[in-house]
Image (cartoon, rainbow, N blue to C red; front, side, top):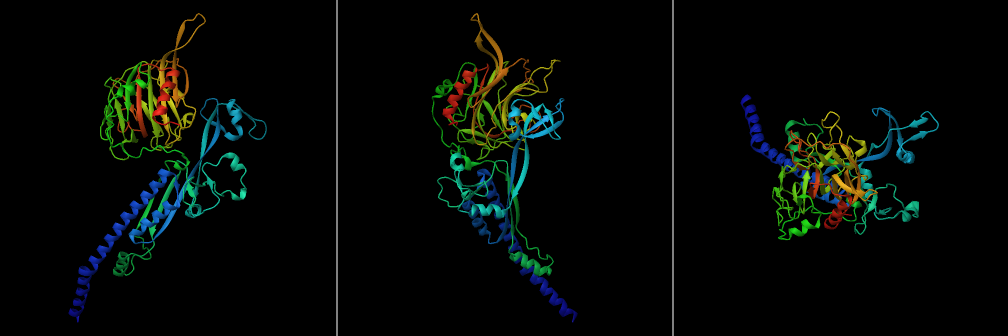
Length: 526
Protein backbone atom coordinates (compact mmCIF):
# COMPACT_ATOMS: atom_id res chain seq x y z
CA UNK A 1 0.00 0.00 0.00
CA UNK A 2 2.86 2.34 0.88
CA UNK A 3 4.45 1.65 -2.48
CA UNK A 4 1.27 2.60 -4.36
CA UNK A 5 1.00 5.84 -2.38
CA UNK A 6 4.60 6.68 -3.13
CA UNK A 7 4.01 6.08 -6.82
CA UNK A 8 0.96 8.35 -6.84
CA UNK A 9 2.91 11.11 -5.07
CA UNK A 10 5.80 10.66 -7.47
CA UNK A 11 3.47 10.95 -10.46
CA UNK A 12 1.89 14.14 -9.05
CA UNK A 13 5.34 15.69 -8.46
CA UNK A 14 6.49 14.68 -11.95
CA UNK A 15 3.39 16.21 -13.51
CA UNK A 16 3.96 19.42 -11.50
CA UNK A 17 7.62 19.62 -12.49
CA UNK A 18 7.40 18.61 -16.14
CA UNK A 19 4.01 20.06 -17.12
CA UNK A 20 2.51 22.57 -14.67
CA UNK A 21 5.75 24.38 -13.73
CA UNK A 22 6.76 25.15 -17.35
CA UNK A 23 3.25 26.41 -18.06
CA UNK A 24 3.36 28.62 -14.94
CA UNK A 25 6.78 30.01 -15.89
CA UNK A 26 5.50 30.80 -19.39
CA UNK A 27 2.47 32.69 -18.04
CA UNK A 28 4.59 34.45 -15.43
CA UNK A 29 6.90 35.59 -18.22
CA UNK A 30 3.82 36.88 -20.06
CA UNK A 31 2.91 38.91 -16.96
CA UNK A 32 6.45 40.33 -16.83
CA UNK A 33 6.16 41.42 -20.46
CA UNK A 34 2.73 42.94 -19.77
CA UNK A 35 4.20 44.86 -16.81
CA UNK A 36 7.05 46.23 -18.93
CA UNK A 37 4.60 47.34 -21.63
CA UNK A 38 2.21 48.89 -19.10
CA UNK A 39 5.09 50.73 -17.42
CA UNK A 40 6.31 52.22 -20.72
CA UNK A 41 2.78 53.15 -21.86
CA UNK A 42 2.03 54.83 -18.52
CA UNK A 43 5.31 56.74 -18.30
CA UNK A 44 4.92 57.92 -21.91
CA UNK A 45 1.39 59.13 -21.15
CA UNK A 46 2.44 61.01 -18.00
CA UNK A 47 5.46 62.60 -19.72
CA UNK A 48 3.27 63.64 -22.66
CA UNK A 49 0.75 65.26 -20.30
CA UNK A 50 3.45 67.00 -18.26
CA UNK A 51 5.21 68.34 -21.36
CA UNK A 52 1.93 69.81 -22.67
CA UNK A 53 0.21 70.84 -19.44
CA UNK A 54 -3.17 69.39 -20.34
CA UNK A 55 -5.16 66.18 -20.96
CA UNK A 56 -7.50 65.83 -23.90
CA UNK A 57 -10.04 63.11 -24.63
CA UNK A 58 -7.86 61.86 -27.49
CA UNK A 59 -4.80 61.61 -25.22
CA UNK A 60 -6.70 59.69 -22.54
CA UNK A 61 -8.47 57.37 -24.99
CA UNK A 62 -5.17 56.63 -26.72
CA UNK A 63 -3.66 55.72 -23.33
CA UNK A 64 -6.50 53.27 -22.62
CA UNK A 65 -6.25 51.80 -26.11
CA UNK A 66 -2.50 51.22 -25.79
CA UNK A 67 -2.95 49.50 -22.43
CA UNK A 68 -5.36 47.02 -24.03
CA UNK A 69 -2.48 45.42 -25.97
CA UNK A 70 -1.39 43.79 -22.69
CA UNK A 71 -4.69 41.83 -22.76
CA UNK A 72 -5.45 42.83 -19.17
CA UNK A 73 -8.08 45.08 -17.64
CA UNK A 74 -7.01 47.79 -15.20
CA UNK A 75 -8.16 50.03 -12.43
CA UNK A 76 -6.79 53.46 -13.38
CA UNK A 77 -6.36 56.39 -10.99
CA UNK A 78 -5.45 59.89 -12.20
CA UNK A 79 -4.47 62.59 -9.73
CA UNK A 80 -3.61 66.25 -10.28
CA UNK A 81 -2.03 68.24 -7.46
CA UNK A 82 -2.49 71.92 -8.26
CA UNK A 83 -0.03 74.33 -6.71
CA UNK A 84 -1.31 77.82 -6.06
CA UNK A 85 1.11 80.71 -5.65
CA UNK A 86 -0.59 83.56 -3.78
CA UNK A 87 1.34 86.85 -3.58
CA UNK A 88 1.86 88.09 -0.03
CA UNK A 89 3.82 90.85 1.67
CA UNK A 90 6.05 90.04 4.63
CA UNK A 91 7.02 92.69 7.15
CA UNK A 92 10.30 91.95 8.90
CA UNK A 93 11.67 93.24 12.18
CA UNK A 94 14.33 95.94 12.01
CA UNK A 95 17.11 93.35 12.16
CA UNK A 96 15.54 91.66 9.08
CA UNK A 97 15.72 88.25 10.79
CA UNK A 98 12.14 87.68 11.97
CA UNK A 99 8.82 87.93 10.13
CA UNK A 100 6.61 90.33 12.02
CA UNK A 101 3.41 90.06 9.94
CA UNK A 102 2.03 88.83 6.64
CA UNK A 103 -0.40 90.72 4.38
CA UNK A 104 -2.45 89.85 1.29
CA UNK A 105 -0.74 91.59 -1.63
CA UNK A 106 -4.03 92.35 -3.41
CA UNK A 107 -5.31 94.26 -0.36
CA UNK A 108 -2.13 96.14 0.47
CA UNK A 109 -0.33 96.51 -2.88
CA UNK A 110 -0.68 100.31 -2.94
CA UNK A 111 0.87 100.63 0.51
CA UNK A 112 3.60 98.16 -0.49
CA UNK A 113 4.63 100.46 -3.33
CA UNK A 114 5.00 103.26 -0.77
CA UNK A 115 7.19 101.04 1.42
CA UNK A 116 5.00 101.05 4.51
CA UNK A 117 1.78 99.34 5.59
CA UNK A 118 -0.45 101.03 8.17
CA UNK A 119 -3.18 99.05 9.95
CA UNK A 120 -5.47 101.51 11.71
CA UNK A 121 -7.52 99.23 13.98
CA UNK A 122 -7.86 95.70 15.33
CA UNK A 123 -5.42 93.45 17.13
CA UNK A 124 -2.73 94.05 14.46
CA UNK A 125 -3.00 97.85 14.46
CA UNK A 126 0.32 99.52 13.81
CA UNK A 127 2.88 100.58 11.21
CA UNK A 128 4.83 97.90 9.37
CA UNK A 129 8.15 98.49 7.56
CA UNK A 130 10.88 96.33 5.98
CA UNK A 131 8.47 94.93 3.42
CA UNK A 132 9.33 91.99 1.13
CA UNK A 133 7.12 90.66 -1.65
CA UNK A 134 6.89 86.84 -1.64
CA UNK A 135 4.26 84.14 -2.08
CA UNK A 136 2.35 81.48 -0.19
CA UNK A 137 2.22 78.00 -1.67
CA UNK A 138 -0.93 75.93 -1.25
CA UNK A 139 -1.99 72.66 -2.84
CA UNK A 140 -5.31 71.21 -3.98
CA UNK A 141 -5.79 67.68 -5.27
CA UNK A 142 -8.14 66.78 -8.14
CA UNK A 143 -9.26 63.18 -8.50
CA UNK A 144 -9.86 61.06 -11.56
CA UNK A 145 -13.62 61.68 -11.45
CA UNK A 146 -13.08 65.44 -11.58
CA UNK A 147 -10.54 65.18 -14.39
CA UNK A 148 -12.67 62.86 -16.54
CA UNK A 149 -15.80 64.96 -15.97
CA UNK A 150 -13.96 67.84 -17.62
CA UNK A 151 -12.56 66.05 -20.67
CA UNK A 152 -15.83 64.15 -21.23
CA UNK A 153 -17.85 67.37 -21.32
CA UNK A 154 -18.72 69.18 -24.55
CA UNK A 155 -20.42 72.27 -23.11
CA UNK A 156 -19.66 75.30 -20.92
CA UNK A 157 -16.31 76.03 -22.50
CA UNK A 158 -14.16 79.09 -22.83
CA UNK A 159 -11.84 79.51 -25.77
CA UNK A 160 -8.30 80.50 -24.86
CA UNK A 161 -8.63 83.86 -26.59
CA UNK A 162 -11.85 85.02 -24.88
CA UNK A 163 -11.25 88.70 -24.15
CA UNK A 164 -12.25 90.39 -20.90
CA UNK A 165 -15.20 92.37 -22.32
CA UNK A 166 -16.70 89.26 -23.90
CA UNK A 167 -16.21 87.36 -20.66
CA UNK A 168 -17.99 90.05 -18.61
CA UNK A 169 -21.00 89.99 -20.91
CA UNK A 170 -21.45 86.21 -20.89
CA UNK A 171 -24.48 84.69 -19.16
CA UNK A 172 -23.20 83.17 -15.93
CA UNK A 173 -25.17 80.00 -16.70
CA UNK A 174 -22.96 79.40 -19.73
CA UNK A 175 -19.71 79.72 -17.76
CA UNK A 176 -17.82 76.61 -16.66
CA UNK A 177 -17.94 75.59 -13.02
CA UNK A 178 -14.22 74.85 -13.12
CA UNK A 179 -12.04 77.66 -14.41
CA UNK A 180 -9.68 75.27 -16.20
CA UNK A 181 -12.23 74.06 -18.76
CA UNK A 182 -11.06 75.14 -22.19
CA UNK A 183 -11.25 74.15 -25.77
CA UNK A 184 -8.33 74.77 -28.09
CA UNK A 185 -9.32 77.31 -30.68
CA UNK A 186 -9.46 75.80 -34.15
CA UNK A 187 -9.53 72.20 -32.90
CA UNK A 188 -12.04 69.69 -34.30
CA UNK A 189 -12.22 67.85 -30.97
CA UNK A 190 -15.67 68.57 -29.45
CA UNK A 191 -14.46 67.74 -25.94
CA UNK A 192 -12.90 70.06 -23.40
CA UNK A 193 -9.30 69.75 -22.29
CA UNK A 194 -8.29 69.52 -18.65
CA UNK A 195 -5.51 72.05 -18.07
CA UNK A 196 -2.78 72.25 -15.45
CA UNK A 197 -0.24 74.89 -14.52
CA UNK A 198 3.51 74.65 -14.72
CA UNK A 199 4.89 73.34 -11.44
CA UNK A 200 1.79 71.23 -10.67
CA UNK A 201 2.11 67.48 -10.10
CA UNK A 202 0.36 64.84 -12.21
CA UNK A 203 0.44 61.11 -11.48
CA UNK A 204 -1.17 57.90 -12.70
CA UNK A 205 -1.64 54.58 -10.88
CA UNK A 206 -2.70 51.44 -12.76
CA UNK A 207 -3.42 48.02 -11.26
CA UNK A 208 -4.68 44.96 -13.09
CA UNK A 209 -8.13 43.88 -11.90
CA UNK A 210 -8.40 40.65 -13.88
CA UNK A 211 -6.92 37.39 -12.63
CA UNK A 212 -4.07 36.35 -14.91
CA UNK A 213 -3.35 32.72 -15.77
CA UNK A 214 -0.13 32.84 -13.75
CA UNK A 215 -2.15 33.83 -10.68
CA UNK A 216 -4.69 31.05 -11.28
CA UNK A 217 -1.96 28.39 -11.55
CA UNK A 218 -0.11 29.77 -8.51
CA UNK A 219 -3.27 29.74 -6.40
CA UNK A 220 -4.02 26.19 -7.52
CA UNK A 221 -0.56 24.93 -6.62
CA UNK A 222 -0.46 26.76 -3.27
CA UNK A 223 -4.15 26.08 -2.44
CA UNK A 224 -4.96 29.82 -2.37
CA UNK A 225 -1.95 30.88 -0.32
CA UNK A 226 -1.96 34.31 -2.04
CA UNK A 227 -5.49 35.00 -0.78
CA UNK A 228 -7.48 37.61 -2.69
CA UNK A 229 -4.44 39.54 -3.90
CA UNK A 230 -4.50 39.08 -7.68
CA UNK A 231 -2.32 42.10 -8.49
CA UNK A 232 0.43 41.19 -10.93
CA UNK A 233 0.83 44.56 -12.66
CA UNK A 234 1.11 47.71 -10.55
CA UNK A 235 2.52 51.00 -11.86
CA UNK A 236 2.67 54.28 -9.95
CA UNK A 237 4.29 57.07 -11.97
CA UNK A 238 4.12 60.85 -11.75
CA UNK A 239 6.03 64.03 -12.37
CA UNK A 240 6.01 67.80 -12.55
CA UNK A 241 4.10 69.74 -15.22
CA UNK A 242 6.77 71.43 -17.34
CA UNK A 243 4.78 73.67 -19.69
CA UNK A 244 1.40 75.24 -20.46
CA UNK A 245 1.29 74.83 -24.23
CA UNK A 246 -2.48 75.40 -24.33
CA UNK A 247 -1.78 79.06 -23.53
CA UNK A 248 0.60 79.61 -26.41
CA UNK A 249 -0.61 81.13 -29.65
CA UNK A 250 2.82 80.34 -31.04
CA UNK A 251 4.94 77.46 -29.76
CA UNK A 252 8.68 77.75 -30.29
CA UNK A 253 9.58 74.31 -31.58
CA UNK A 254 13.09 73.04 -30.95
CA UNK A 255 12.17 69.39 -30.49
CA UNK A 256 13.84 68.12 -33.64
CA UNK A 257 17.48 68.12 -34.58
CA UNK A 258 18.93 70.29 -37.31
CA UNK A 259 20.07 67.39 -39.51
CA UNK A 260 21.59 69.25 -42.45
CA UNK A 261 24.64 71.43 -42.74
CA UNK A 262 23.97 75.06 -43.60
CA UNK A 263 27.03 75.37 -45.87
CA UNK A 264 26.77 79.13 -45.60
CA UNK A 265 30.25 80.69 -45.66
CA UNK A 266 29.01 84.21 -45.04
CA UNK A 267 29.86 84.21 -41.32
CA UNK A 268 31.14 87.79 -41.47
CA UNK A 269 27.60 89.10 -41.94
CA UNK A 270 26.54 87.36 -38.74
CA UNK A 271 29.48 88.79 -36.80
CA UNK A 272 29.10 92.29 -38.15
CA UNK A 273 25.35 92.41 -37.49
CA UNK A 274 26.08 92.73 -33.75
CA UNK A 275 28.18 95.39 -32.06
CA UNK A 276 31.72 94.30 -32.94
CA UNK A 277 33.82 96.69 -30.82
CA UNK A 278 35.19 94.60 -27.93
CA UNK A 279 33.58 91.34 -29.07
CA UNK A 280 35.83 88.44 -28.01
CA UNK A 281 33.43 85.47 -28.13
CA UNK A 282 30.51 84.77 -30.49
CA UNK A 283 28.82 81.37 -30.29
CA UNK A 284 25.86 80.69 -32.59
CA UNK A 285 23.94 77.40 -32.60
CA UNK A 286 23.21 77.54 -36.33
CA UNK A 287 26.93 77.70 -37.15
CA UNK A 288 28.19 75.67 -34.20
CA UNK A 289 30.89 73.98 -36.30
CA UNK A 290 32.28 77.08 -38.00
CA UNK A 291 30.65 77.64 -41.40
CA UNK A 292 28.41 74.57 -40.92
CA UNK A 293 26.21 72.90 -38.34
CA UNK A 294 26.93 69.55 -36.66
CA UNK A 295 24.63 67.50 -34.41
CA UNK A 296 27.54 65.72 -32.73
CA UNK A 297 30.32 68.28 -32.31
CA UNK A 298 31.58 68.74 -28.75
CA UNK A 299 33.43 71.95 -29.66
CA UNK A 300 31.30 75.08 -30.18
CA UNK A 301 33.26 77.24 -32.62
CA UNK A 302 33.89 80.88 -31.79
CA UNK A 303 32.85 83.00 -34.80
CA UNK A 304 34.43 86.24 -33.54
CA UNK A 305 37.83 85.31 -35.02
CA UNK A 306 39.50 85.15 -31.59
CA UNK A 307 39.59 81.32 -31.42
CA UNK A 308 37.86 81.27 -28.01
CA UNK A 309 36.10 78.00 -28.78
CA UNK A 310 33.83 76.42 -26.16
CA UNK A 311 34.07 72.78 -25.06
CA UNK A 312 30.96 70.71 -24.27
CA UNK A 313 30.92 68.32 -21.29
CA UNK A 314 28.50 65.52 -20.26
CA UNK A 315 26.19 65.81 -23.28
CA UNK A 316 24.56 62.62 -24.61
CA UNK A 317 23.82 64.05 -28.09
CA UNK A 318 20.29 62.66 -28.22
CA UNK A 319 16.83 64.23 -28.38
CA UNK A 320 17.14 65.57 -24.82
CA UNK A 321 20.81 66.30 -24.20
CA UNK A 322 22.67 68.03 -27.01
CA UNK A 323 22.05 69.95 -30.21
CA UNK A 324 18.36 70.50 -30.94
CA UNK A 325 17.48 72.52 -34.04
CA UNK A 326 19.66 75.66 -33.73
CA UNK A 327 20.28 75.48 -29.98
CA UNK A 328 22.08 73.43 -27.34
CA UNK A 329 19.74 71.77 -24.83
CA UNK A 330 20.78 71.28 -21.19
CA UNK A 331 19.07 68.87 -18.79
CA UNK A 332 20.86 69.89 -15.58
CA UNK A 333 23.91 67.64 -15.89
CA UNK A 334 25.83 69.32 -18.73
CA UNK A 335 27.98 72.42 -19.01
CA UNK A 336 30.08 74.26 -21.58
CA UNK A 337 33.47 75.78 -20.78
CA UNK A 338 34.96 78.80 -22.58
CA UNK A 339 38.65 79.69 -22.59
CA UNK A 340 40.02 81.58 -19.58
CA UNK A 341 39.20 85.26 -20.15
CA UNK A 342 40.39 87.82 -17.60
CA UNK A 343 38.57 91.18 -17.74
CA UNK A 344 38.11 94.15 -15.41
CA UNK A 345 35.01 95.11 -17.39
CA UNK A 346 32.70 92.97 -19.50
CA UNK A 347 29.38 92.36 -21.19
CA UNK A 348 27.77 88.92 -21.17
CA UNK A 349 24.93 88.23 -23.63
CA UNK A 350 22.93 85.04 -24.10
CA UNK A 351 19.79 83.95 -25.96
CA UNK A 352 18.10 81.24 -23.92
CA UNK A 353 14.83 79.40 -23.32
CA UNK A 354 14.14 77.86 -19.87
CA UNK A 355 12.34 74.53 -19.49
CA UNK A 356 10.65 75.42 -16.20
CA UNK A 357 10.51 78.07 -13.48
CA UNK A 358 10.53 75.69 -10.49
CA UNK A 359 13.35 73.21 -9.92
CA UNK A 360 13.82 71.49 -6.56
CA UNK A 361 17.32 70.31 -7.49
CA UNK A 362 18.68 73.63 -8.79
CA UNK A 363 16.56 76.54 -7.50
CA UNK A 364 19.30 78.96 -8.59
CA UNK A 365 20.61 78.28 -12.08
CA UNK A 366 23.71 79.93 -13.48
CA UNK A 367 23.24 80.69 -17.18
CA UNK A 368 26.64 82.21 -18.01
CA UNK A 369 29.26 83.11 -15.41
CA UNK A 370 32.81 82.88 -14.11
CA UNK A 371 31.72 83.00 -10.45
CA UNK A 372 34.33 81.23 -8.32
CA UNK A 373 35.40 83.05 -5.14
CA UNK A 374 34.60 86.24 -7.03
CA UNK A 375 33.51 86.96 -10.57
CA UNK A 376 30.21 87.82 -12.22
CA UNK A 377 27.38 86.03 -13.96
CA UNK A 378 23.82 85.88 -15.28
CA UNK A 379 21.66 83.93 -12.81
CA UNK A 380 18.13 82.54 -13.20
CA UNK A 381 16.45 82.41 -9.79
CA UNK A 382 13.60 79.89 -9.84
CA UNK A 383 10.31 80.41 -7.99
CA UNK A 384 11.62 78.26 -5.14
CA UNK A 385 14.84 80.28 -4.75
CA UNK A 386 15.75 81.07 -1.14
CA UNK A 387 16.14 84.76 -2.06
CA UNK A 388 12.53 85.95 -2.08
CA UNK A 389 13.40 89.26 -3.76
CA UNK A 390 14.73 87.41 -6.85
CA UNK A 391 12.25 84.55 -7.18
CA UNK A 392 11.32 83.79 -10.77
CA UNK A 393 13.63 86.51 -12.10
CA UNK A 394 16.96 87.00 -13.86
CA UNK A 395 19.73 88.73 -11.93
CA UNK A 396 23.19 90.01 -12.90
CA UNK A 397 25.43 89.29 -9.90
CA UNK A 398 28.90 90.79 -9.39
CA UNK A 399 31.13 89.97 -6.43
CA UNK A 400 33.07 92.81 -4.84
CA UNK A 401 35.70 93.38 -2.17
CA UNK A 402 34.62 93.87 1.43
CA UNK A 403 36.25 96.30 3.87
CA UNK A 404 39.06 93.79 4.52
CA UNK A 405 39.89 93.30 0.86
CA UNK A 406 38.23 89.87 0.71
CA UNK A 407 35.41 88.73 -1.51
CA UNK A 408 32.01 89.92 -0.27
CA UNK A 409 29.48 87.31 0.82
CA UNK A 410 26.64 89.10 -0.98
CA UNK A 411 26.99 90.14 -4.64
CA UNK A 412 26.02 93.44 -6.16
CA UNK A 413 22.85 92.55 -8.10
CA UNK A 414 20.61 94.06 -10.71
CA UNK A 415 17.33 92.10 -10.87
CA UNK A 416 14.94 92.08 -13.82
CA UNK A 417 11.42 93.32 -13.19
CA UNK A 418 9.40 90.51 -14.77
CA UNK A 419 8.92 86.91 -13.68
CA UNK A 420 10.38 84.61 -16.35
CA UNK A 421 8.08 82.29 -18.30
CA UNK A 422 8.99 78.76 -19.29
CA UNK A 423 9.35 77.88 -23.00
CA UNK A 424 9.79 81.52 -23.99
CA UNK A 425 12.93 82.82 -25.69
CA UNK A 426 14.84 85.59 -23.89
CA UNK A 427 17.69 87.80 -25.03
CA UNK A 428 19.69 88.72 -21.92
CA UNK A 429 22.52 91.24 -21.73
CA UNK A 430 24.59 91.95 -18.61
CA UNK A 431 26.98 94.91 -18.88
CA UNK A 432 29.53 96.03 -16.30
CA UNK A 433 32.15 98.80 -16.54
CA UNK A 434 32.81 102.38 -17.63
CA UNK A 435 30.47 104.08 -20.06
CA UNK A 436 30.28 107.62 -21.38
CA UNK A 437 27.01 108.82 -19.91
CA UNK A 438 26.73 112.52 -20.54
CA UNK A 439 28.50 115.87 -20.67
CA UNK A 440 28.76 118.40 -17.88
CA UNK A 441 27.96 122.10 -18.15
CA UNK A 442 31.34 122.84 -19.74
CA UNK A 443 30.70 120.27 -22.45
CA UNK A 444 33.28 117.80 -21.12
CA UNK A 445 32.27 114.14 -21.34
CA UNK A 446 32.35 112.22 -18.09
CA UNK A 447 32.36 108.49 -17.39
CA UNK A 448 30.59 106.36 -14.82
CA UNK A 449 31.01 102.79 -13.67
CA UNK A 450 27.66 101.08 -14.20
CA UNK A 451 26.01 97.68 -13.88
CA UNK A 452 23.28 97.11 -16.48
CA UNK A 453 20.87 94.22 -17.14
CA UNK A 454 18.81 94.04 -20.32
CA UNK A 455 16.03 91.47 -20.81
CA UNK A 456 14.35 91.51 -24.21
CA UNK A 457 15.32 95.13 -24.72
CA UNK A 458 14.21 96.41 -21.29
CA UNK A 459 17.33 97.72 -19.55
CA UNK A 460 17.70 98.31 -15.81
CA UNK A 461 20.83 99.24 -13.90
CA UNK A 462 22.64 101.25 -11.30
CA UNK A 463 25.89 103.04 -10.63
CA UNK A 464 28.52 100.61 -9.43
CA UNK A 465 30.52 101.95 -6.48
CA UNK A 466 32.29 98.80 -5.27
CA UNK A 467 35.53 97.19 -6.40
CA UNK A 468 35.17 94.17 -8.67
CA UNK A 469 36.65 91.03 -7.11
CA UNK A 470 37.96 88.76 -9.84
CA UNK A 471 37.38 85.02 -9.66
CA UNK A 472 40.03 82.49 -8.68
CA UNK A 473 42.88 82.20 -11.17
CA UNK A 474 42.07 79.93 -14.10
CA UNK A 475 38.29 80.21 -13.74
CA UNK A 476 36.72 79.76 -17.15
CA UNK A 477 33.44 81.26 -18.24
CA UNK A 478 30.83 78.48 -17.99
CA UNK A 479 27.55 78.16 -19.87
CA UNK A 480 25.03 76.25 -17.76
CA UNK A 481 26.82 76.43 -14.41
CA UNK A 482 29.68 77.85 -12.34
CA UNK A 483 33.42 77.04 -12.52
CA UNK A 484 33.46 75.66 -8.97
CA UNK A 485 35.36 72.67 -7.63
CA UNK A 486 33.54 69.49 -6.65
CA UNK A 487 31.33 66.87 -8.26
CA UNK A 488 28.40 68.36 -10.21
CA UNK A 489 29.33 71.96 -9.39
CA UNK A 490 29.42 72.89 -13.07
CA UNK A 491 25.92 71.63 -13.84
CA UNK A 492 22.72 73.56 -13.24
CA UNK A 493 20.83 74.82 -16.28
CA UNK A 494 17.73 73.17 -17.73
CA UNK A 495 16.88 74.81 -21.04
CA UNK A 496 18.19 75.67 -24.50
CA UNK A 497 20.98 78.14 -25.30
CA UNK A 498 20.94 79.53 -28.85
CA UNK A 499 23.67 82.16 -28.80
CA UNK A 500 26.39 83.55 -26.51
CA UNK A 501 28.40 86.76 -26.85
CA UNK A 502 31.11 88.10 -24.54
CA UNK A 503 32.69 91.58 -24.74
CA UNK A 504 35.78 92.88 -22.95
CA UNK A 505 34.05 96.19 -22.26
CA UNK A 506 30.72 97.50 -21.02
CA UNK A 507 28.07 97.99 -23.70
CA UNK A 508 25.90 101.06 -23.23
CA UNK A 509 22.13 100.91 -22.89
CA UNK A 510 21.77 101.93 -26.54
CA UNK A 511 24.17 99.21 -27.69
CA UNK A 512 22.33 96.58 -25.62
CA UNK A 513 19.07 97.55 -27.28
CA UNK A 514 20.74 97.50 -30.71
CA UNK A 515 21.92 93.91 -30.19
CA UNK A 516 18.49 92.93 -28.86
CA UNK A 517 16.77 94.12 -32.04
CA UNK A 518 18.97 91.69 -34.01
CA UNK A 519 18.18 88.83 -31.59
CA UNK A 520 14.49 89.69 -31.77
CA UNK A 521 14.49 89.23 -35.54
CA UNK A 522 16.76 86.16 -35.61
CA UNK A 523 14.93 84.21 -32.88
CA UNK A 524 11.34 85.51 -33.32
CA UNK A 525 11.27 86.93 -29.79
CA UNK A 526 7.88 88.27 -28.80
